[in-house]
Image (cartoon, rainbow, N blue to C red; front, side, top):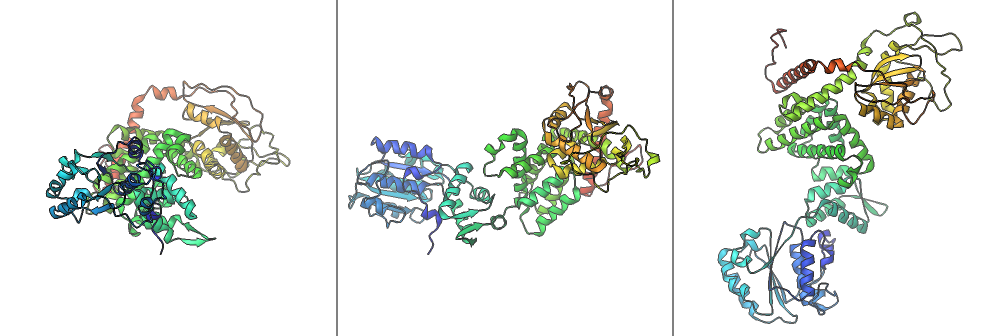
Length: 598
């Protein structure tokens, strides 16, 4: 019969015990210096090593070479007290949950009088000591206070406060703690390597979360997953889907779908994902916990950047990169607002009669920052408005009529469009047609044609690089003269990011050539007060920095001098958000007294 993992890997020395250095170090010092007390109290959560440490201490005390801090493992006492041993007559383990009365205490007192049969000490280990009644403890008090020289007591309990004070005051108390996730993850990886098990990425992270810091619980869960895994090439392979379903966690793909829907304000996708959670029979509270954990990870990634791998252990680099893109699509203010709404919903769902309703209301609050009247909600609304202002100007020309013939397009100066061999060829079907030139010349493109095709250009950028798309979708076309394209940046920071990442500039230049067949230089246009260096550039299809011609003075200073306009936009966004929230909640829409309607 297969032996359970937590029994096969039970530590036999203090050095093998993980995550309890605050206990093992002073105990080993006491053993080395021969300052061992007559009674000990080990307390802490379940599965963290209390009973195991009591057995190790008994081995150290009764070892033929002891007392020692490291048992030899060869003498009769060490062999009997090992993980596969039969037990020793001089080490008595008592389950205090079923032996907790006065009569049991008297029986223990009578047994303690007799000398050990073979070893140095007679050791009594009382597990679940908090279950002993006050009368039973009082019956033990005298012998615990003044035991014979050959007797040692070790009490193990999860609730030390229930052990009466007169007993606690006569013991050395050592508190055990839950094992840290990083240390537990490393330990489970070692176990999997020893057992020749190949867990899929993310499986051990789920096991660590489900184990909650308990080594025994974590090993039991891992043992269960191994038992239900298929054998391939002589080793068990634990699949992520099966582990997530068995442990009851939300699948990573569903969490990514919900997070992306929140970032893009896709209400239909958000509520369809909620319906998937309900229809699959998953506990809504568990889904909210997993979503809050995901948002917390995104906040960490957005806050610490490349150092996130040292905080979020066990996550693959590709997954960290994807999380970075998700965090950038939110922004810190809106991400903090979403995490706060989810955290509040998790609190309100305790004892709720309709968890699905609470879940849907939570989604509505995340989608509508106007429902949050705090400073975080205001910052989230402003952040969303700024994002809309950056995209609106580029998106507006898409709905304009597209020119269908050359006479409707004024042809500017043509540019040399002989592409290099590695430059992608223009797409056959462009979003907007260009003016036909004579044979042997290149198509002539105007600003209007470029603006009409801007949506498809951004789509091409997204296919090339999602990181480049995150920057490019905020840009606004200002002017196209000859081969110089003027783009409006929301801030100097955006411009610096665009210039620093050669992939962004290359992806945008290739997308423009693929759609319209022209090669361009870029001229930045940013808000007043930002400094832009003038950099010359040859018309190359691929460069390492963004070519800059010269900075234009933005007209945004006029907008800054009129703060009432911005306040008006914020108020309008707030009214719209409240109206949307009321619709979700089933309340009456807010009527605008000026317009006579919503």
